[in-house]
Image 1 (cartoon, protein in one colour):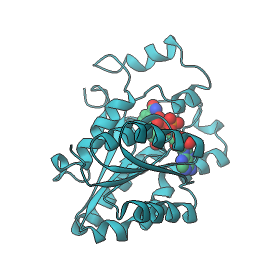
Image 2 (cartoon, helix red, strand yellow; image 1 turned 120 degrees about the horizontal axis):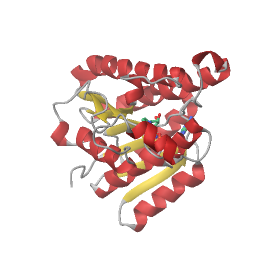
Image 3 (cartoon, protein in one colour; image 1 turned 180 degrees about the horizontal axis):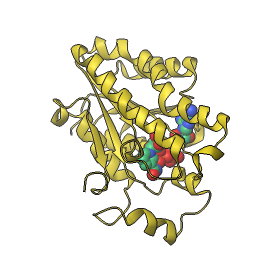
Image 4 (tube, rainbow, N blue to C red; image 1 turned 90 degrees about the horizontal axis):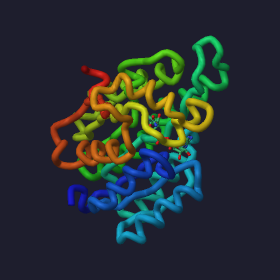
Length: 253
Ligand SMILES: NC(=O)c1ccc[n+]([C@@H]2O[C@H](COP(=O)([O-])OP(=O)(O)OC[C@H]3O[C@@H](n4cnc5c(N)ncnc54)[C@H](O)[C@@H]3O)[C@@H](O)[C@H]2O)c1
């Protein structure tokens, strides 16, 4: 087991990538705090982990609220005795549309959740990571931050900020033996993707997204979870400041 005796907090873990990461981390031996705005969903994920013999608890946390971020970290340390891994995964999309049609409120929300929340979660987590002599922070960015497509300008900009922030955090936290890396997935069929297209994902959507992916399919939550295990585990112990595309070759080929 690659994460034996590690304690992890995962935000946005009631669904999609966060759910898959929580389940894989628990299967690899970690104790997992499943945190999400969606309390019922978070509880379901924690229950499913426990039914499979894993260690998990859940709580409702809005990562844009300082008090919630602090309570999330405090609860984790109280229940599991420390903290080794923070996964800043919660995120919100932009409905497909040209950049000048998006409202200021929508833009503020995208940046609040996708970027600014990391200040709150990470600031609360740092003393506890330092107390363990180091740790791993994994940020869910996107290939949208590396290779923007038309129709999601503000989301793309938030993920570009997420990529830049990951590198800056890594450069500042290395001396504390805290590694900071980013997951950069291509599109996957999660509820977030449905919000992007404004309804059910059709074959037309699939075809359009897959056409630029050399390996010929979309990403899956399991692809992302596998990369998240690697980055958090000792196998990734010399990796920091990495923006890891999980994209079937779309970004580089
Ligand atoms: N699905 C994709 O195509 C795709 C591709 C690249 C990157 N991403 C990124 O992956 C991450 C996870 O997205 P997903 O696709 O699994 O979507 P998802 O909708 O399945 O999961 C996102 C979760 O975040 C939670 N959340 C939203 N706002 C929150 C807040 N303020 N506080 C706490 N939780 C909050 C939601 O309740 C939801 O459970 C996001 O950061 C997203 O931008 C998604």
